[in-house]
Length: 131
Image (cartoon, rainbow, N blue to C red; front, side, top):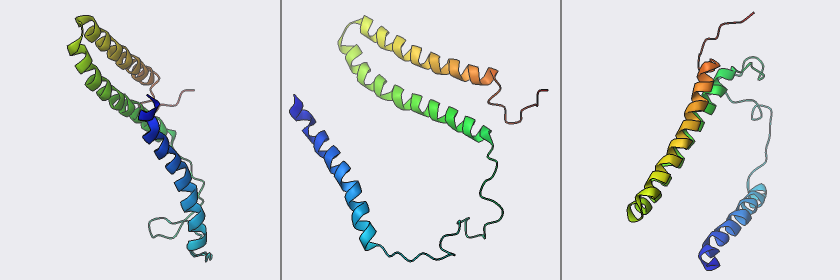
């Protein structure tokens, strides 16, 4: 049984060895010639203006996190449906119902999270100040 995982173990070892090895070899191969202009911040070919410490709007972060959560939901649901559709068609009706309920619970938890973000008004781009 463990012979099936030999390829995975070999690829894991190759990956763990390959990354540090290429970084180590690259340190000796690449040129090292730093100067002031090279070490400045690159802003699309424009001269940097102002401080690099800018007030970042946290609404971008909130929207990005919500997007990632629902993107992961879709990425997790499709394989479950593909694998269990075949198993549910081969076995009893109860197995298909169980798979459906599992997916439904998963989606309901995420919908509750979306409702929570909506009620807290985290999805509003312009928030009113409360005093």
